[in-house]
Amino acid sequence: GVNPSPWTAAVNAPFAHPANRFWPSLQRGGIMSQLVDASAGLPDSALQEFADKRIGLTNFVSELATARASELTKEQLREGAARIVKMVSRLRPEAVAVTGITAYRDAFGLRKAKLGLQDPALVEVPAGWPRDVQLWVVPQPSGINAHENIDSLGAKWAAVWNATEPEAH
Figure (cartoon, rainbow, N blue to C red):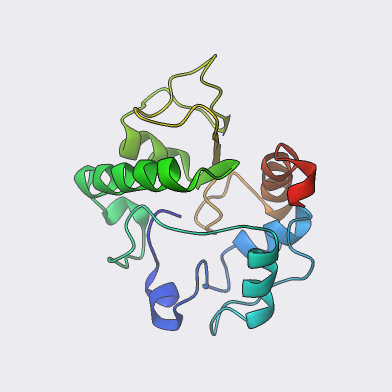
């Protein structure tokens, strides 16, 4: 994610606002087996499913809750991006998906980036990004993003999921 919303911060659960389409799109994309309601906190079953599937979540800026990601400064996003690159270099996940093309562009200074797989053979990737870790940009799931719906978001999450090793599923 980019950073927590006030609702997410209040209940300590990612993408917790009931209007956010993150959890429904993960279910629609076949990643989560059930629809997660994180509005009052993340259920243990969702945490367990994430752990079983080796999925983790983090934000560019975790310590500041805002109503809109646009309230963050580019400097805050750049600092978060540097932290993410270090984390990815250390943990070496199969894939990383960043939610939100504008935040991705601002955080990594890659103004021409587009949604989808950031294939280093075709596009510029962030400095220091490990070549063996897939990098994806998916649309922001907030209801503010009117260009996407649960089905289109689910299809984009499925593309990320299906591009990883089958034994990870």
